[in-house]
Length: 503
View 1 (cartoon, one colour):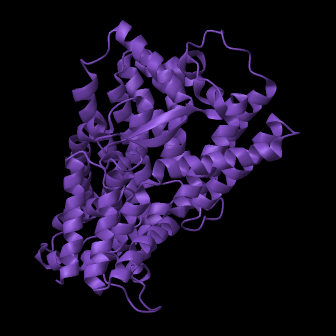
View 2 (tube, helix red, strand yellow):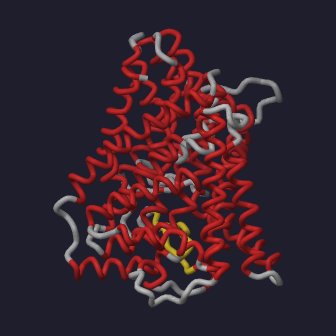
View 3 (cartoon, one colour):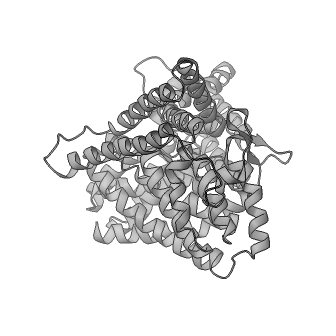
């Protein structure tokens, strides 16, 4: 391997070491991009340009993720003006009777909402409604954050079963149907999630519930945070956190966020009831059509990768309709304001991923040519692929070993804080390993997709959307990542073992 390969690999190792040292990695990623490009090309100007080009390339590739987060956030913001977002999920508070039940309810509701709307946009809603109620009955905020991260940022995002963005990316390289990868990824994510949730319940919930006084105090602290729009801040020690500002300049109240549903709140209007019923009904109908198209012949099958545009388009139209219903005279301005707030939320919470993803892209041949300014049509270097290719001959041609190798590769890819940009690469590797090891390429691609998504999507890497979970639950993102590491890795190992044998 060339010196550029070693500089790139040292950069990846430095990222991991920096995380362990509780420091921010954005500056390190920028420096790593410059040094890698400089050593590869021998030109300072190429190195300088690569820093900018890497950020542009990462932003372009991640833009669909940013837009879907923005439009769903905007829709929920419009619903918030009517109070429909609260009404939509407030009946679920009646299920929260004690800390044990609260842990389960929080996990199930987060999973279902995240599968339909994606995890990051629904986090403020969960924090506003269910989180204070769960903490009030004794669930520790750290345990609540764990439940949210595992089911939303882990289980829902790693399968991405509704929108199908992840499986579509994996299928590009694996040359297998995206539906086949999606089905296997769903099973793997469920196994990993159940194992991780059970692990954390035994360690962090059972026997560690808060006493009534501590629970009430924690719930009051969380109420003001739950109503706000989260944004990332960097502490003096370099670690990240998320703070919140009340949406629309208002003030958060305990009654709205998580108070007892005892009739103290105003009686909701007909418009509020209609929106609270119609919006989830529209998404439920869309989900039903997508599932019927996938598993039956009753409706035409939806093309691979069309889930995200359908959900995004539905959310955008819902934004318009809700704004019109809320105020017919000012709906044009309100629609624009909510969309702007959604864009700002998406970039505040996920923008830190861009320079880190840009560094990872330098090692992927599909993007490195653009970043290094190579002539059009000239193949860029595959620094990461070359390094993995050096190891590949030493992987025993046995399905079990190939499966765990794909899990490890996926987790390395997930170090960019997102995990999805490298899925076409892991798909290609799954296709190659599948044929040589006698394993199913779709299963191998699904394993790598889970490894990348659980790592970068928001359970193990602190520069991912895990910072939003930590901020909205009022816990340290470092502590949260540490508590998640062993359960998540255990879950992934168990799920990979099952997939290697049974799928």
